[in-house]
Amino acid sequence: MATFFGEVLSVYSRAVEEDDEDLEENEEDEQIRRELEEKRTVQLQWSPEVSESLKGGNKFSCSDFVLAVGHNAAGFLSAYVLASSNWDAVGRALVWNERSRAVVGQTGEESACVFYRHKDSPSVLVCRVTCYIAEDQLFQWTEKVFDCLQTRELNVTVLSDSSVVDYKTADYLCGSSAPFLRSLHTGAFTDQPVCQPLEQPNIVTGLPAAVLNHCQVHRIAAAVYQCYSDVIGPNSVTMETYRPVLTKLGRSVQVDSSPNTDVLRKFVRTAEIQSNLYI
Image (cartoon, rainbow, N blue to C red; front, top):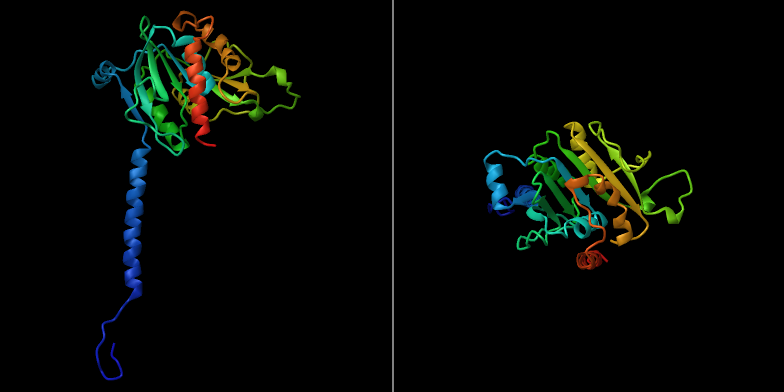
């Protein structure tokens, strides 16, 4: 390009520089995306004994796996079952997403997703989950956990919280009828549920649904017991609703006649603090 007097000027191409900027931005976006995906990866941390066993190719010899999802379900497990000295914390799951923050420095007892094994019956494994697990993490959690378990003759019991406002029925629902249980099970489940089945068009969502789907595909006997409550937050009345489910397991899981008040109080207080974070 030349001026009127013949002076040659360097050509400035805005289009080329914009393409370079777009390329750099795309590379930065891709890097951020990879870092987020890595951060959102579900991590399982087991005790040294369990880790060594898993590294040697030995999976959990598990006859019963009880999973409690939600503050009332997990609270029932903590106050009525785990309060005794018959359980050891053997692992935890670290989950990071927009509503949960996995803290590396936390102990296993403080984590929001903890696995416990019965001292006298090592084949009984329970897990309480109070953290939010995002949709893109449900498959990860389910695959990684069940990959550590021997699924032959395994029975899976899932306790799940839900609000009564999500329960759909053509009949009038009296307020005094809540809380109540509904069940949904896989084809391999041959036992008799302790409550009536979940009616259509009601559905199970989140982690309970992911676990039930996995068990259905892999022909594992599993049942989800969903408790519909009209009370927001953990409370002893709603927790008591789960009692028939674990009582039916018999000697595998011993349910105390009354809750450990210290554990119950601590659990309710922790749940209140967590709920206030999103106000």
